[in-house]
Length: 163
Image 1: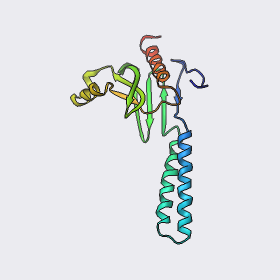
Image 2: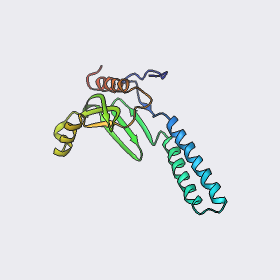
Image 3: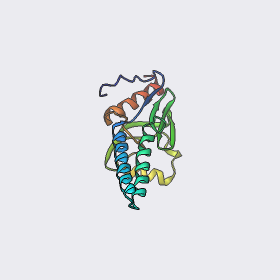
Image 4: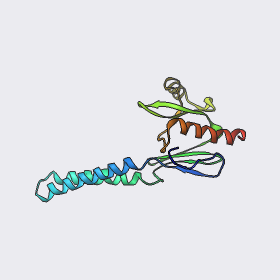
């Protein structure tokens, strides 16, 4: 797990967060855009202020993404919660099936199926059949996809069958 302490299943609540490096780099890029826009604006060019605004939006949104409240995966003995953007979704371990590596928009991610397929609408069921999974984790939380899938399966197994 790349130097991180082992996260044993059933050992309380654990919160995983995505890599901060990419968000820091994007925030620095936003700062660069802001400074370039400010330089244009101070020389009297009209387009400097919209560039300043763009830099503020890019930099500010990236700084917001650094918060664990914005993006995280929380594992508990009851289930898991994914925070992504301004949404928060929670699943109980009994409600999901196995976790496995999957391709989501040409990137590797951890996919999973719902345990009760009867609750899916016909459309969602067909989409799941086509893409090979019902849902997925939006991040890998600084872990390899295979390691994260194994970790999620271990937590689910511990919660549903006791180990």
